Structures are given as structure tokens and as C-alpha cells.
Length: 116
Image (cartoon, helix red, strand yellow):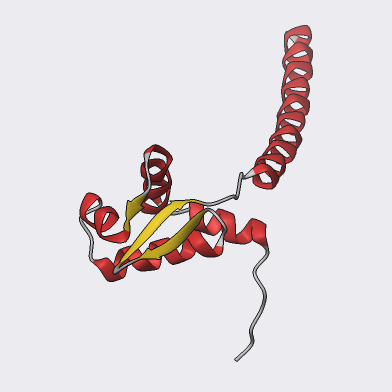
């Protein structure tokens, strides 16, 4: 089996691609919670919530700590700065492309009006 290492950027975007995981981050931004509390809040099984929390943990967005028999979750140290920079760089690229397209459309419209 081929094993490849997932980049931190890929792990973050994979974690953020799921609405439940985004909801977990939103919930944890208000207060720490146990996996049981999160599972109840999202109406899912403990096993399902553990899988979501593991993905968030692997991305550095959530940390867990066992307190007695309860596994508590809190926001991790990942601040999404690299992800925000990646998005901004690509947003600027697309904005420049659309601006260039607008200019072409404007030129064609002007030529069409001049020909009429």
C-alpha cells in the first residue's frame, strides 16, 4: 500500500470541507466540550463524532485531553493563517482574470457599437 504524507494545508482544507466539522469548530469557539456533548449536539454516534474530532485533531484545529473517563475537546493552536494566505493569493489571481475578461468584453462591446 502506498502511503503519502498529507500537507498541513491539505489536512486543514479536508477538515474544513465538512459542515459537521465546521460546526464543531464553531461550537468549540464558545466553550470546550466533551465528545459526548458534541455527539449529542450534532445528533450523531460517539464513534462518528470521534472520527470527526480525529480529522480536526490531525489538522491541528482541535486538541483533546482525557479527564477521568471523559475526552474533552478544545480549539487547537492552528490559526488558519497559511490557509487564509492561500485563499487570498488565489482570490487575487481570479480577480485579475475576471478584470481582464471585463476589459475584453468592454472592448468588444465598444467595437460592436462603433460598427452599428
